[in-house]
Image (cartoon, rainbow, N blue to C red; front, side):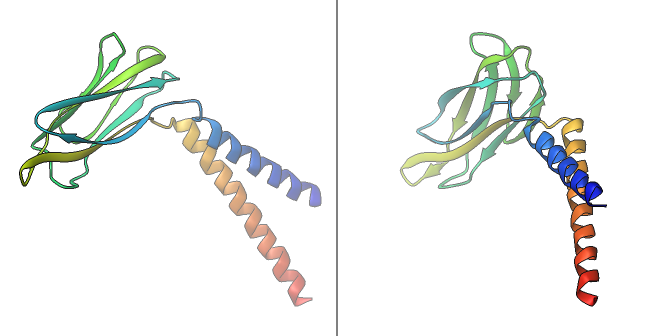
Amino acid sequence: MPYVANLGRVAGAAALALGLTANSNAAGLEWTDSILDNPSVVSRSFSIDSLTQQRVSLFDNAFLANFDFLSVLISRTGGATAATLLAPGTTTFTPTAIGSYTATVFGDPGALGARSVSTFGVTVAAVPEPETWAMMLVGMGLVGWQLRRKAKASGATRLV
């Protein structure tokens, strides 16, 4: 019986490790900034290391003042447009190639007294594939099964 328990621990650890590392190779972008004066354009480069679907999120942080207009354009550096988001929200795109991309934010900040200033956030991250979710759930199930077996075993020894 100890052999089965050890096998359960090993399988649970392996499943959890595989689930956590399946998407570790996907680079992306997490960017928070502010725009002063209106209208303005700011951009930042980032890399994409896998051809999996990417989720682009644009947030008006509503800190200091809300934007009058805010959009983001994702394009391959020196190439074609990959995704456009014309208002705060979320969209997805599948990259055509691995490499360098650019996120360009166009914004017209809201007025705050005599100045115009607003803050935004942009996130580009890989969307987990169904296999990743399945592996993570299997790992959690095996860990839960092992904990339940351990609780039953320790409860039985207390009564003796």
